[in-house]
Image (cartoon, one colour):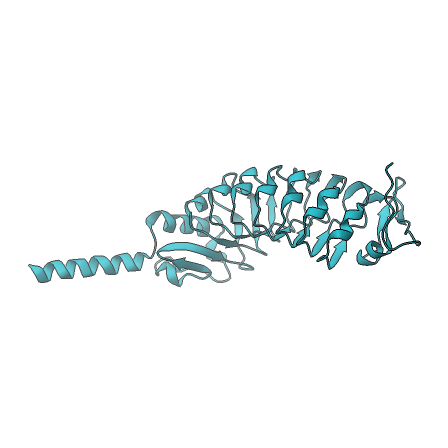
Length: 284
């Protein structure tokens, strides 16, 4: 009897090892496979094999913590069931043909550190729930069809280091909370339809190394506070409607030397203050 019990427990353990993860998480992965035309993926999953062998899936303690399927010919939409992968820390679907909207409740994935859905055909807005991902360090949604405004609460992502949203259809102003993210190193918002000014609060972003606002509809004075960003190595804020005097330092730092579009739609260079390296700021 003892031997039978031992054999049964061994068999049960073997089955559980084969399953790798909970049924709920396996169902979520299978739904992702089905929703993105898995049969046509470049590297397919063998659904009959242990999940630990599936391409791009990383497990830890029986939980799915990473899905990396970049450039793998995924065609379709991200299913809501992906929200059941509550331990997911990385989702990289870069350079596929994902369409539809980002799941509105994606913020339920509290452990997420890297979310890369760039270079797809994603439409709709950036869900406000994304701001609930307190551990997020890397958010890349560039080269999509995303519209609407940036979430007002985006500053809640106080661990964020990379925010790359270029080449979309994003409108409105930069939310004031964004300037509160002191960890941000790369901010790429170029080639959208952003309007309004660049706040002097940009000086708060002390870790910023790369800033690109190129090709938007932003206006107002170029804030001299940009010079306080000692770690800034790359900047391109040209092809907006910024105005006013700028310093030599900022003109040199900008990739296109502060080339702006005036009210007649003509490209013009901002006037450089030749007297000093630092811009003279007017109270007007």
